[in-house]
Length: 159
Length: 159
Image 1 (cartoon, rainbow over the protein chains, first blue to last red):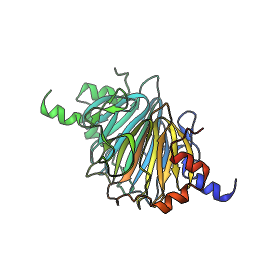
Image 2 (image 1 turned 90 degrees about the vertical axis):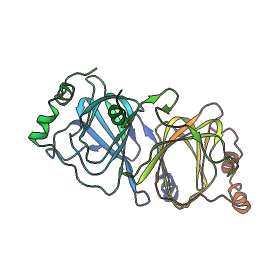
Image 3 (image 1 turned 135 degrees about the vertical axis):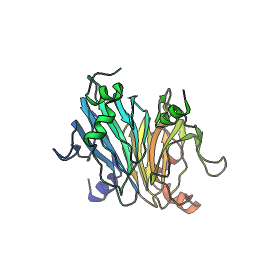
Image 4 (image 1 turned 30 degrees about the vertical axis):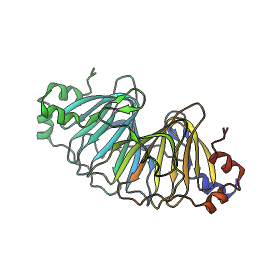
C-alpha cells in the first residue's frame, strides 16, 4: 500500500473484536493513584483540530467503576455495551445499551458496571475543559444519607 | 411523578426499540427539495449550551442515501446499525457496525445503505458550522471517471 493510500485510509478506522478499533490505543483511564477507580480503560475515538469536542470510549470490566467526581464541563454519554448504574447528582439510574445520559456541569457523577457484565460507553466532551474535583468527607457523608446512593457507592449489587 | 423528578429524569433518555430514544424526535433529514437524498431520518441526541458539539443519529432505510456534499466543518462518524458504503473524497469505503469515519473539512462525502439493510450512524459535529455545498456538473463528471465511484453514485449494488 502506498503512502498516499495510507493517508486516505486514515479516514476509516475499522471496528475490531471486543470494542477496540484499528489504530486506537486502549489506555489506562487515569494515572494510577490520581483518584479512586477500578478496572476501567479509555480509548480516544475522535480528537482533532477541526472538532471542538472529543469522543472517547470508556469500558469497565464487571464490578469496575469510574471516579466519583464533578467539574464545570458537561458530559454527553451513550451506553454502547452491557449494563450498569450511574449516579448523577443524588440519584442512581439503571442504564443499558444505547441509553443517553446528560451530566450537567458541576454535578457529581460515577458509573459502575454490574457484577457480571462489562459497561462500555461513548462520552462526548468539550476539547477545552476544567479538571475534575473529588468529593470531601463531608460530601461523601451527605451522599450516604440516601440508602440507594450509599449502596451504589459501596458497590453493592443493585437491581 | 413530581415536576422535580421529571426534571431529574431529563438527564436520562432511555433507548427505545428500533434505534429511537425517549423524548427524541425522529425528524426529516433535510427540508424536502433542498438537495438530493433518499429515505433518511435525523435525530438530535445531544445539543446544548454546555457542549461545543452536537451528536446526531442519522438512519437510512435499505437503498437510502444522504446528500453528496462538502463543507468547511468536519464530521466524526460511528456506524451504529447495519452496513453500507461511504464516499470520502474520491474513494468508496465499505462500512459496518462500530467503524469510525473521519470526514475532513471541504471533502466531498456521501453515505449509502446497502440494498437490504438499513445504515444508522452517530455524527459528531461542531455546534457552529457552515452550510453544505453541492457539486456542480463539472465535479460530478470528474467523480464519474472512476468506475467504483460512478457505481456508488448511481446506487449500484456494491460488494
